[in-house]
Amino acid sequence: MNKKKAQTALMIAAAAIFAAAAAVSVYQLRRTKPNTVKIISDGKVLYTLDLSRESDREIIVEYEGRRNVIVIENHDIYVREADCPDHTCIKMGKLSQSSTQIVCLPNKLMIRRAYSSEESGTDGTA
Ligand SMILES: [Zn+2]
Image 1: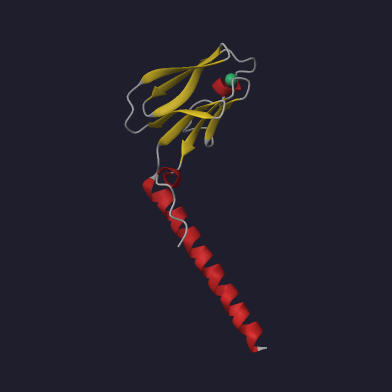
Image 2: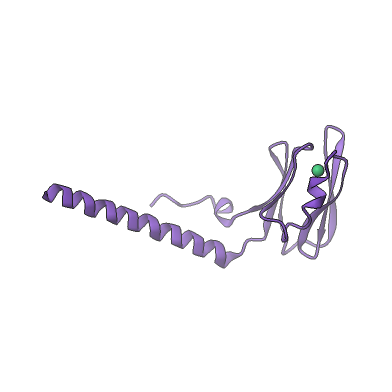
């Protein structure tokens, strides 16, 4: 009985610690409001950009002869031109308006947000 109680207490403590850690990471995520995006082509990170510091410009990414014209504008990013068949990446619009990423499947292109935990190499082990 006592052993079981101790075990339960331990589990509750572990759960509490886990919940606290999760809460802290969510808090940090919200507080830092990362504006870092990664442009990934065929699984390779081509660019890591901090949109809050970027001035307006164009980035052209090519994959097997097909290209995507990525535009940075007003600290936002979107695909303006692409010669993929579906143009889904263009239709997704600006990153700030889409969910967390813009994807061009045919051209294996991905523009996604990078979270601060990725940048700082995570100190998750306590
Ligand atoms: Zn596309």
